[in-house]
Length: 154
Image (tube, rainbow, N blue to C red; front, side):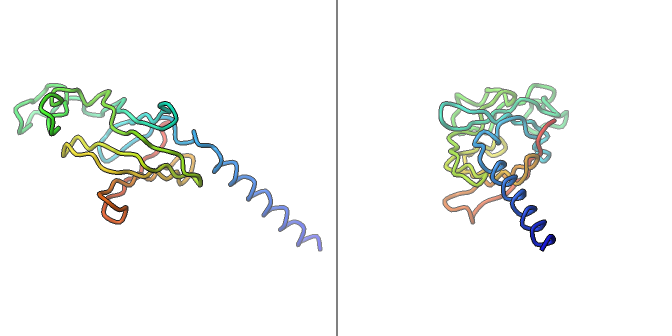
């Protein structure tokens, strides 16, 4: 009987802990490390939605072998389809917008901008743990896209 009560108690504690983790719509806010691009993204609340901007770049300048003729200059959004935005610095660039908390550690209906190809994609964020964020960018439906995992900056 005592073993059964202990298991029941442990299950209750786990359920409570998981519901506390799942209940916070602001849990996605903070700085996240995108290892693939060598950047830090700050996710923050903007009105009743969530947005994100680039706050740090491992390599803030174009490399010496830059094919675009910008070696040594600060990285800018040169692939943007809007010529007026091609000189906007990547550092400080607002690249995520419109995310709404859908519950269960998921933020949907947002978009993410990829400065490497100058395109904006639909995006879904899933907080897999307090330290790991799944970022799924896609065209149309989530099945047609790519996933990255970002880690929380401490």
